[in-house]
Length: 283
Image 1 (cartoon, rainbow, N blue to C red):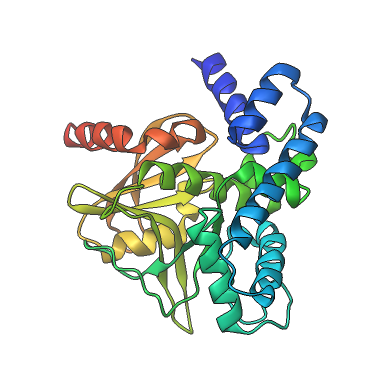
Image 2: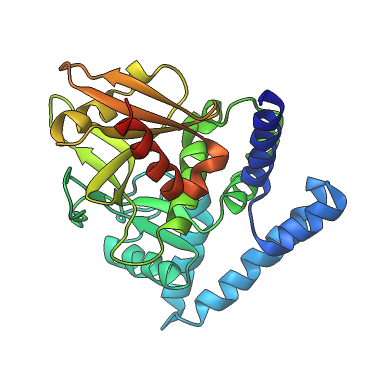
């Protein structure tokens, strides 16, 4: 029903804004006041800095780590280069070591792209990774986005859709924590035309493409490109609308099935993919 969808969407948006860190959630559930969360966010960052600096082998690395943490929140959800990271003069090797230290501390995750359309999903470590942060609420607080996110009707309308993509990535990474199951994103990089699908995940014998987009399915150009290169006919769009299945046709006339998944169901994507494929078999 409409009221349930609107309620669940609103709760998911609140979760996106403040994040899921236990101390933050506990205080917000008592006060419903985002201003009172400031010392909690600041305390979390201090504890991460203290923890991460234990891994640093010298003062230089500590400085690079501090710079990297401060820059990470502004660069969350985009592909990064190590050289000069965060408008610095640090070399690629220094930033690489700092970011790997942050990754070891589980504050960030460097997601590398794949060009595969069939299993196995092999990451291409020669290409630029995309930066993901442990918690989207931390990104929103330290990048100063919480105010803009409050009251929004669609996550895709804020910060060029990066927060929408980031929270979906956070949900997928939580669902796919055990190897060999991995979350990647897909790229086809050509001079004339490039394509990028927000996420791809392994499911049964398929690589399933996932786009985080508002608007009409016909605008999902990169997803159409992926479907054209794979043997199967399944794709997912995560958005603010309701759960439904559409029959689509890509630009080359190949028919495929699109699972339209509300943001708040992303954490149960495996269950909904089972349902999706069962439903498609009945078409």
